[in-house]
Amino acid sequence: MTRYAFSVNAELCIGCSSCGMACKNQYSLEPGMVWRKLYPLSEDIYPHRDRAFFSLACNHCDKPACLEGCPVGAYTKRPDGIVVHNENSCIGCRNCLRNCPFGAPKYNAAEGHVEKCSMCWQRIDEGLLPACVQACPTGALTLVDLDSFDETGTVQYPPGFPHRPDVAPSTRFKLPSTPLIIRRDV
Image (tube, rainbow, N blue to C red; front, side, top):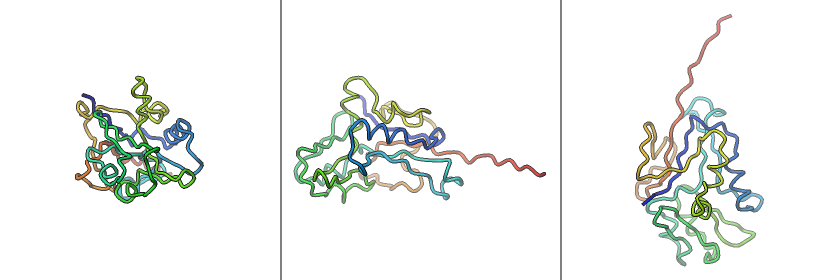
């Protein structure tokens, strides 16, 4: 069976935020509500903050802390690895916010419940890509099958990302290479 995951390639990401805007448009998210966000890499990872980014949302963990901490069972994990949150069951207690080491669930104060990336499971079930993946103009954000994914140079825990094997995040990352600096002596 397929185990879906996001693959984020910082070599290809140009920081355009198309992924985040596609997510907001797909779900008509309230102003201020963000499920997918672009993060510039810190200088200890990459020397030029304005040139390297990670697009992050829910990691659809193998052992999701959000699911374990929900007292009303508002989270389910599908056999294909997608962690789904049922907003109608959510009581807004925010246990999942406290439990998730990656900050993926977001509290929607206007609606009184928690929301998060669903990996566009409805689109996937229709044979389509998640909105964020489809919108990426460079192919920096892709949907992969973890059971067959074997791309050289990818990591599960890049520098600065919480190392949490207890939840086993599914997202995989390709770090940017340091650019060659050409000096021009005039």
